[in-house]
Length: 177
Length: 177
DNA sequence: GCTCTTTCATAACGGTCGCTAGTAAATCCG
DNA sequence: CGGATTTACTAGCGACCGTTATGAAAGAGC
Image (cartoon, rainbow over all chains, first blue to last red; front, side, top):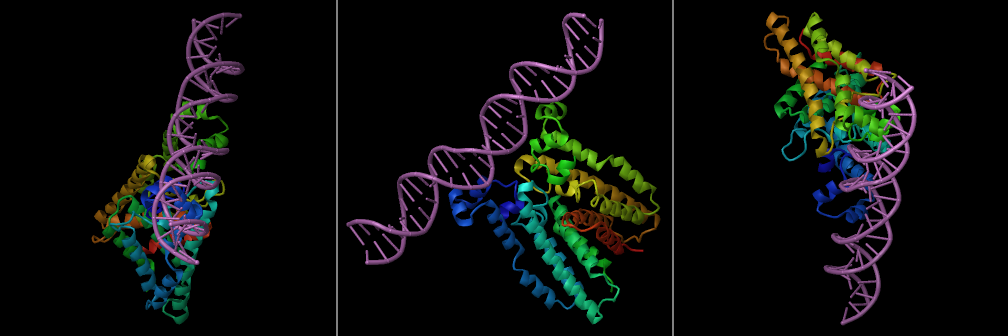
């Protein structure tokens, strides 16, 4: 997972993986089938249980708190000492050849799942009157996702944790009170 | 440029390029040297003249107008009918092998150049009193950059032009009046 | 103790990668 | 018109890609 995170899906070779895992190629193929399934496994491990995100969003007092927490967590995740910079979901399958279209599709689906959790949580606050009725949940969710994925680029370009946290907080100023 | 835009730097092969350009490999090598220099040329063509951006920023009545215009232009660029989805600068060298580190560096430098134009323009408005003195130009610039690069992911995931423009406008709500 | 299954590595497969030597046609210049 | 230069091709280079057939070593069950 760390190697894919650092170097991307297609641009990571099997020998990169064998070197990092300390096993030889046949062991990888016996355990995971092929490179694609190994990556999808790494992607699942990176994204975590979707239910956990939903639970965290449900637990938060407001949609605003939930989204702010998610973006700040991302800021910290992208600047960890023991992990590569940026976001695996944002960078590992950003582009690629036709062969890897299904892998990009899987990453896109993971992002859509996150978006859908955000939208639902915002809608809940709108329904309850915590957010004004003219609020557009889809736009706020898209904005949150764009900031999150965009911070990955900043992190890869060398922005430090404080810079990312400042961006995270500034981005929340877009929200209605 | 379009092929790199669509498929990324390392994940675009020379034969992809020959097919798109209608010439054979030796012609490419005679004209551009190697794949890396061809990509850097495409990158320069994509990014355009840095002076143009600076001029546009200088021409705008306020920093806020300048940044809003940049982000909305990006939203339109990422959803063009005749070009690939998203941003070449954001996606073509998001990750990659050690061999391509200098290409990623070139993309990062292009982003830093844009950031620096934004920062300067904001600082100008702060100096003149159009923006409050406690404004942090670096944070606003980072946010603008993150939204811009993040919109590339949304565009690749299928978001349409209106959705991106809505994100662009929503992101500007972070700015002080 | 002796099979039997599992675990892992060596070695190699066909294919594609980025790149280039060598050559034939086209174009330019005197 | 004729020699020099450019332009573009065919063919093929070594290296590495993802993947797998084969076989040795190690633990499990009788």
